Length: 83
Ligand SMILES: [Zn+2]
Image (cartoon, rainbow, N blue to C red; front, side, top):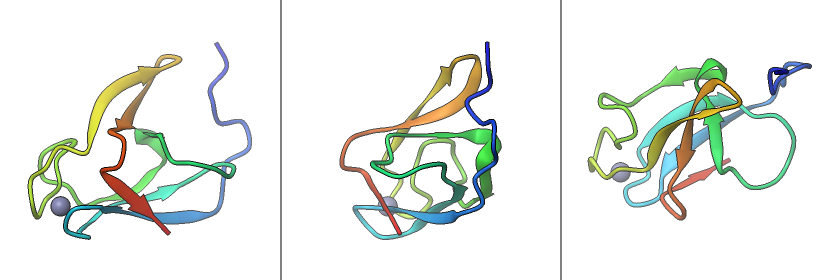
């Protein structure tokens, strides 16, 4: 199976908790469009203490999953925003 990441994206985005605006990840996002999942190998900086939980308000914002064999977080709808 091909890795989902042939040409490495260079653009870095910041992902925030929608409830309290705490930073969650710095992430190298490929392509455009909605952020529904993120691959762990592309997370540049991880601000969480407990996986998938906001470090500030402790709300769960994602679930761990595998996408084509690659560990990833799938965001729960409406829990995060990015810029
Ligand atoms: Zn939060």
